Image (tube, rainbow over all chains, first blue to last red; front, side):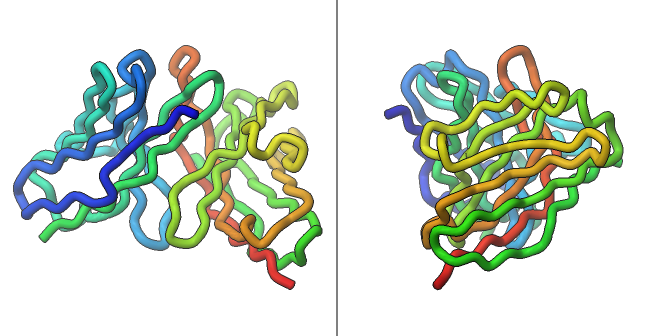
Length: 106
Length: 121
């Protein structure tokens, strides 16, 4: 069955660039979204259609998708960006989520 | 402003059913589809399906086909998700979310606050 694979955890120092990957067979042929979820909160859409930012999402969040890997990049990472991040794609009219990546800012 | 307000926490016994509501406001209810996603404690997100409020048409995840039913009331701008034959591993926070379509791809741009469903004997 199709799966989206994310690293369980990523660490980054404040002000540095964080990259979170999401891998799946021919994922570059699909559009990928990214969600941020902080403890006790609902998920928040941060990237849609591979690289577009919803209104209100800081410019430091960007996305790309090619081949088998989609990447969420956070430039100038801030302490407030510490959260779980999930990728999401539509495969055969169904929604798949990646397993999630815990981003630690230390 | 767009808001999705869900019903309160539920405790159910194994084998029972639960019905969670999601009241939409701040936009035209029939012009955006609604999806349901759940999350067990400490786990990732799991998709249950989606519904078109305008027509009532639904698409369910194969995993939940036969156990989940999504409905709506246009007059009260409320979407509902009912899950039957509950098991202990259905214990999770259930979210509704609005779908923003880009062609045939949708993203979930507004989410409800979540409803904790606990299944225990």
